[in-house]
Length: 222
Length: 214
Image (cartoon, rainbow over all chains, first blue to last red):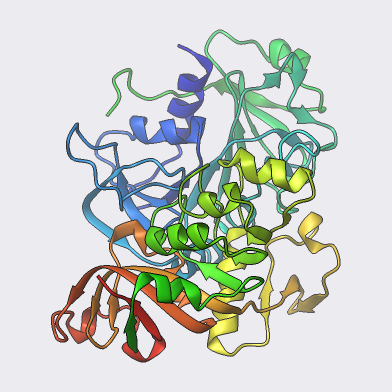
């Protein structure tokens, strides 16, 4: 199983029936492929859609129906559309139960940097700052390292997305939470040892006594 | 509301104007009006919009033609030409969190003196802004935005100017229609008054100044 699949399948286990969820682009988008059987989850696209569905079949494109990445999508039965003010009211107002976003760095207290690398990549923050500040629960989906360097760091070197700490970081190696403002190892991926995670992580991690293997749900995508 | 030709609509907009433009990555942008601005070479514009779309698409056409002096947007990541012009100092880009941007426009159109939001507190977005603490929570004070023109894309307009939008092409359109001195609408369909039922009108007719003729 590749890193993205492990991360997406693990995060899908955080979904609960009836949740309103916003998925960022990249690995987060994959989470929609692994919704556990029997759950109904509402996916929001911040350009103004609840009930985002998969890409349409050949010949069924509707150019006015896109996700927040600009990709032509479908709308599931029960979908709704609205303007951008309502969409961000849903986000800032705490109506979005969970957001899953990519990350560049997360610090030891759970603060996220994911929108810019000054001098290299200045795309604009889009909706990321509102999502991290406003969603009820913030989950970061990212590879544990980039070019061999830990993305879970003592202190973010990149500009922060929000001072509000995230709730959970899921990588291909581990699940980390931030109780009492301290990075804490909760789970390891199948075949990964606690020592492997510690060796790959710059930030000091508190290791819980009950560290256990990540649940990854069913083999077959829903 | 006045129905006018495409050329006349674009001629209303002078060099140096501020324009709010609907659309999200080019979806819900009045392409015909943009094309006409490019043809006329209306320049030195201040553009307020969600993003600058992609090269050669929607607002990306204005960028490519070098007509945008200043852009107040949330995202330029899919348009490398905007990034190049920003780095070259040809276009000033003010990046604003998307929820803050739409709410600043809403405040401008709804007669509010500003917006209090926690988004951006403690980040680079806070730089140069006042903060206020209410009930123990810190907020940024964000100023309202208005423009000389709103360029709105609608799915349907009736003969009076009542508007309806479709799917995710709605995005910024009904909000900018509240926040500009003159509102110019390009609608995909022009329909008899009454076809859009009162409950389905998303922008009421009195907000629309000009409808671009078909």
